[in-house]
Length: 108
Image (cartoon, rainbow, N blue to C red; front, side, top):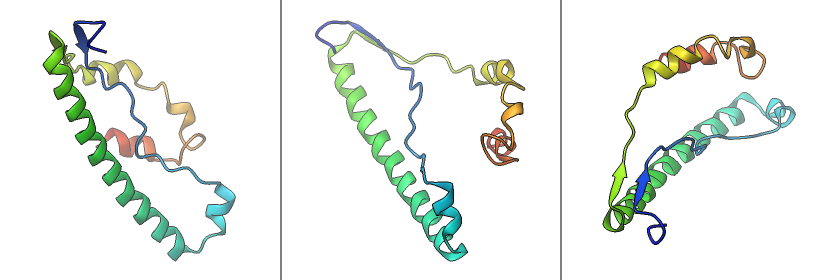
């Protein structure tokens, strides 16, 4: 990348590194104990993948910083973004994800 450009803007747009997919019918066929084992293992795996991804990105950004004139981190305007998106996903509550999940995420 640094051979063709002098500038890089760090956006960290979307990284889907902790998502776990499974057939609902298979999940429903599991016992509560097996579901809990699966959830605990997936949470642990997600934390490990997040840690490894952060380490990998840090290494990549350090390498870029050696060769690129400017590595720019954009101003975080999460409040503005959240305000602009307020209500957009309300119709999906309990449809695309379990009821209450959106509020749980908002309160993080």
